[in-house]
Image (cartoon, rainbow, N blue to C red):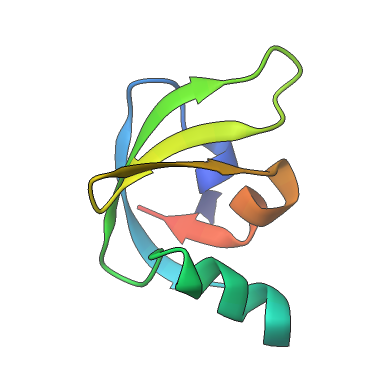
Length: 73
């Protein structure tokens, strides 16, 4: 299983599935990250947290723990 956390700077990936439960999964979906959407990885902080991405035309920062829940192709 490949996750968003493993994506490199400059990669464009497509979301396959969201893992997680309840409020955490709902928060990720409320950010616009749903199955089938494309995500472009813009930056990764020096220590790997957070990850800056571009999704649905806007920039978003995600924690490593949240990125680990997003399965990509």
